[in-house]
Amino acid sequence: MIKQQNYQQARLIENHPDASGRKPVAGFTLLETIFALTLFLLLIVGAATSYVEIQKAQYKSNLMRKVQEQAQNILETLTREYRFGTTDYSCYAEKLNPPCDEVTADANGHTNALAILDNTGTKRVIFRLHEKKPAPVLEILRQEYLNNEWINSTEFIDGFHEMLTPEIVIKNLNFYLSPIGSSPYQNYTDNQKQFQPKVTIALQIDAIGNETSPYRKAEVFLQTTISSRIYQ
Image (cartoon, rainbow, N blue to C red; front, side, top):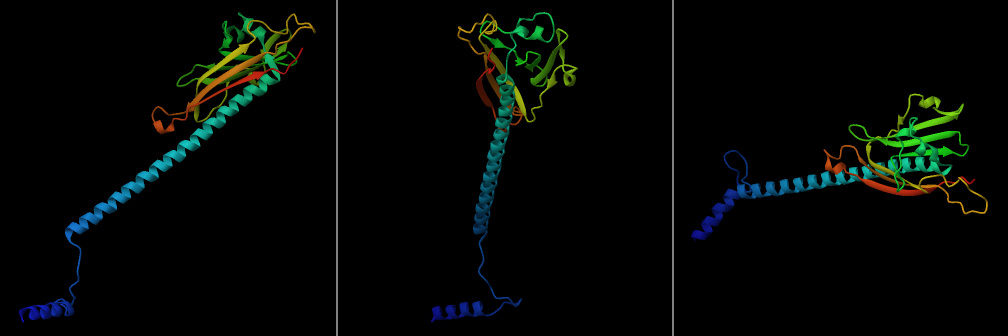
């Protein structure tokens, strides 16, 4: 009898509104609410972290592509100039007149600059890595042989020009000449085997600002060997 009365009272409370006119409804406990909020925040943090990492990976991928493209452009420029020219051995032998007085090559053929003579012997281009703050820069100079002397071309009248390399810094650039010492064209006769001049270029570049932003690091190392196509 008592159980039946309690049941009837519960039904009355459920089916009849309170003094404010609202029916009582079931709700979440404080513990359930805290748990739900904590789970929601964890999901938000995880999603945000994943998004940031994806953005960084995509940025680094694009940065690496740009660095590789610019490295290829530098090598293509050097390759094009050398392939249709040859090593200017006279520049490496020059000790008095600029700019060749600063162009040196050691006994192993390693040089700090690449001096190239065109197929007419009247035009010369010199590439060098110039130490400069905050980072080394690649420079170019074009010259012409007039009145028994080398003079700077009109567009290079003020000397070396910097080759623009946006978003990258050239960390290292080395040239290795072969053969070493003197031109293989000297004392050449038709019945002798001719060794074509060639140069090996080793280039190392990186993205600008990688010291302050590690995720910007996009170091690239390229090496190629080019043979001259000039035959005498």
